[in-house]
Length: 151
Image 1: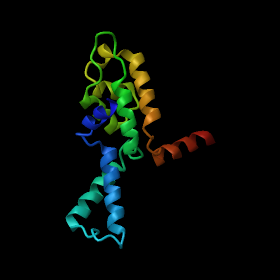
Image 2 (image 1 turned 120 degrees about the horizontal axis):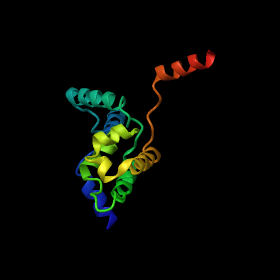
Image 3 (image 1 turned 60 degrees about the vertical axis):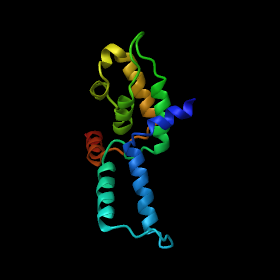
């Protein structure tokens, strides 16, 4: 059934899932009542570095639940007649990068044009946008927009 598909998908751990796990570990280690809270300095440092990297990516606001919700939608997405559906690796890369442009999709999906065509790629981008939370807008962009309005 559907659950098996999701479980098989979990062999690969997406960036949002890693981020969630590291947040959990961090919260656990700051909980003074937790007997397992002491972690080696190296583990703390690695976690901190990975988190700061992930928090600067387009998937920084995406939850593991959202990734889980995305996979079946991508799996069920129909390509052009007789063409291959999205592969596991392609779905994984979509979950890791939250693409928002056709160009990004072409970089992730092999033979995207032939297998899906522009209209379907745009439809896929819509599914991704509504399933995975967007990152916060970059600060400098907001400032730029403000300047334009003043003119």
